[in-house]
Image 1 (cartoon, rainbow, N blue to C red):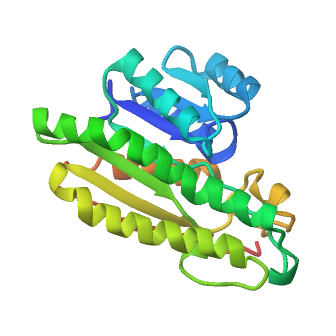
Image 2: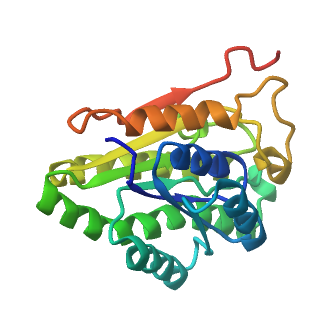
Length: 239
């Protein structure tokens, strides 16, 4: 897919990897809509990127908010070519100390948010496929925690294993509709994630620019070429 004039939605766009993806997609000529709760951060990113970026304040766990955001994108652009489901968080700790609130929050953001956004864009992508022979591309940002369990992150593991299963099933479901589905499994990235998760980051993590460059590469692949899964890790995480 050539990205010039394509319409992309990036969730969790207010900081870190989401913000970098928005920057890089806009630099490739895409019209980018960033969804996140922190409007002040979105406004700052819009000032940085320019008219190619529009921020939409949206709580990805709320059905009506997500539906309204997608409708706003369609009213503005008329189409949706790319959805990057990047919004996610972790609350780490022993399984017997995880509160129900922490469990529900991770399930809502890491799984429900992906479901709501994906469900909202699929009809448009299916229509685009019927019109032009190619529908679009959904990219889900999971984690290496979706491939292996580790102590003290069991709830986060559950959400990312769930996202892996959702992505695999969705890829098989919509491929004949001309819709690509890719799932990324990155290791540690230098973002705010670890501050909120409550654990230290590795000494030598990957950078958001690394992951975003891979996203651009995957999106620009020929229409009949699908990269369905990618695992990414820092080569020397301890430095």
